[in-house]
Image (cartoon, rainbow, N blue to C red; front, side, top):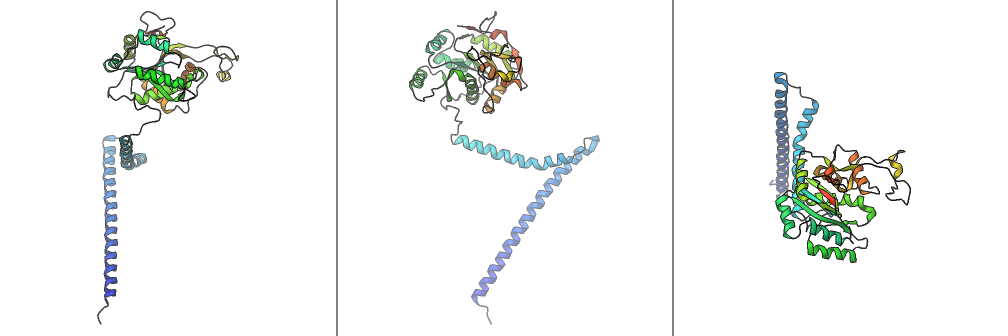
Length: 336
């Protein structure tokens, strides 16, 4: 009796299914065997290196590290691809204004941030007349000497008000501002302002040094360039006119510190750079940027920055040439 067509179809389908399963099983086993053989070759290579000539014996940790290296390399490649894809799609940090990001490809020697406030237009104009280049000369300073100079200001608590608009108009005219969109401009927030300045500056310019000065300081840019180059071999430099002093615990007095009790019974500040002018190297600025949400700001900017340095392996450099109030011969700065 001839088989029915339906039975023939079922038999053919079953054969095809078994064949497919067998093929996949063989492929899987072959792949595992190949993977195991690669690992055996690597382990044998390590054993040969470690066993000959009285070399160091291979430990279990060495074997595990070797076995995991390929997976780590693969993950790093994936992360690099993801980062490249994010950049290609226009991703930027919310801290950074894309209009001011360095697009020249040149690595600056230093970024100088001049701390200013909304009502200090006269001080800014004085600086522009005395030592800060303007227009094409400002661009030439960046290109030829690798020094970026910007006035640093935050935003009004009432965003978009007349204070913000005046700064925006001035910046359209001069193009020499670094506006901290994430920071509210308040005199009692200078510690946080310094933190925000370093964070934005690090993301915007990959400089060797980051310099903070007040807008009542005259700066000799040529002397500053020489000074910074002399510290090029110090990757963790915290440079300034170092000082210490008493903690003011009486409310209502100038320089009152509301957290005075944290400084102990002696009520004395640790050594720190004066806030009028100080320099940090790239590594320190990057640390501030990465840990900005964890770094505490005290009542005063210089104390805040100095406190961030206390637990770090940084080099405190007492540089008298940046003591602007009583500048010595060959000083980098002076008070305007």
